[in-house]
Structures are given as structure tokens and as C-alpha cells.
Image (cartoon, rainbow, N blue to C red):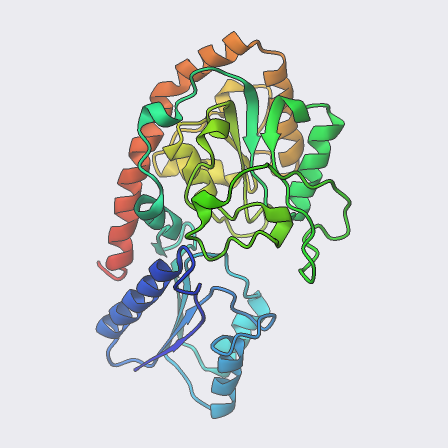
Length: 352
């Protein structure tokens, strides 16, 4: 017996069809693997008491009231990190007499881990030729796309300006959106929005030009190639920043792989070791004076990297890029291998 709870991205959004498909495939595998157990499967996108989706927390409360109990609880994390607090998970486990809890999908370094974003990235991201994305003529030190103005993005943008580095790169940062949560937690900032066409993103149902100053919610491309091809270093501005939160690796880092760029991570620095552990190259040895894995100084350390680049000539940076190129090509090839591995894990979750 299987009970399913949880909402998904709508089918007209990018990632929506893929999330729905993986939710269905997970349910079928659970039914096949545990046919004689009482199983509860929760898709964790927007799931928790802070969300009011009918097929979310209200459905859990109905189960509480029904007096039902379950042998197994399966948490399926695909698109977003888990927003369910530990105390709320404990409430589910206690009220429904859960005997065993399984974490599937984007729970990094766990038994049933696989990376949703790598799977859909292979499927949806453009198959760029190397020549399309390779840096040929250095112009800007860095590229940092930031849409939703989360605390660390606002802080980082302000730091870049304070250190007079803003003209060395290309950066975006979304504006406040009416009736939205204050992602900046009361901070002050100046939005930075590129004047670009939304035409390339028209098929994505999430791209409302009125949100965050009109910055496209680009999940699957490296952005405009005229911008990408100018910039040397990609700053991957992550959804989860704090080192005490669960590690979460999404499409932002995969863009650097398909786009042949070195990167630094504006997020949990444990991401570097996770990437290395899965066969990807990192580039922190090019700035040896900076401890990029120092979890207490992530933003300051990126500033140090940008200051280091500021001391180098364009010729020096092109030479550095050419030295990196074998590792960049390795990362691109490894990404497609890794994506196939993740798809196989998704389709064979309980395979011994």
C-alpha cells in the first residue's frame, strides 16, 4: 500500500514534467520493492507547515487525524532543498508510527542520493560546441548571475562595490518584488539588471518579467553567449549558503561544466569536496593564498580571488585559462557521464 503526498512544479514550467515523471517512477519502485508494507511517499518541493498547498502539509494533518500508521516514510527531494524542519519531520514520524525513513534524491552523501539537476541538465541544457563557449578574448574577470536577492547575494554585491571591483565583471541582482518575502532580511541594495531580451526564455512558464526587476529565471542555459564569452571566472551563487545547512548542488554549478569555465562557489564550501569526490576538477589551487574551504569567510574569500585577478594582465588571465583548459574539457565530459550515472540511480533506487 502506498500513499503519495506532495506538490510539484506545474507541467508548463521547466523541470515540471521531469519532476512529475520522477515522482511517478519513485512511487512505482517503492510499490515493487515494498509490496507488503504501508508506505508513505512525500515529494518535498514546497513541503512543510509554512506552505499551504492542498496536497502538502494539510494532507499530513488529515493523516494525523485519521489515526493511520505507516511502516516506511520516503522523502523525495528533487528540485529544491528540504524545507521541512527536524521537529516537523519528528512530528510526522511520531504521529504516524514510522518505523523507517528513507531519503531519496537530493540528499547528498546518503545511500539513495542522486542529482536531479544533473539529469535534467543533460536533457534540457543546450549542447554547446566547445567553440561556442570557450573564452577566446578576455574582457571581464568574473560573471555572477543573481536573481532572488537572498541575504548573501545582497551582502556579496555590496562587498564587490565596496572594494571597487564591480567594473571588473558582470553581475546581476534582483529587485524587491511586491508582496514577496523579504529575502534580504531588511538589507539595502541597488538592483542590477541586464538589458536583455526574454525571447530565449519564453518557453519557461516561470519567467514573469515583473519579478525581481525582470531578471530571467534561466535554469538551463549559460545565458547570452555575448556575455558568457567575455568573462573568465564564474561565481556560482547558490540556493543554500550556510555551511551548517545540508549541501545542495543544483543547475548553477552544472552551467560552469557545460560552459567551460573555472568557478568559485558562493555557498557551502563543502561543495568543492563533493564535486571532487564525483570526479570533477576544482580550481582553487590557482589562488593558493586563499582558503576557499573556510566556511566562515566565503564572501571575503571570493573578494580575495577577485582582487588577485585584478592584479593580473589580460594576457596573464588568458594564459591561466589555457592552462586550465584540459580540466575544463574534462569537467564538460564528466558532466555528461555523471548525468547518465544519476539517471541510472534514479531508475534503480533500491538496486542491491
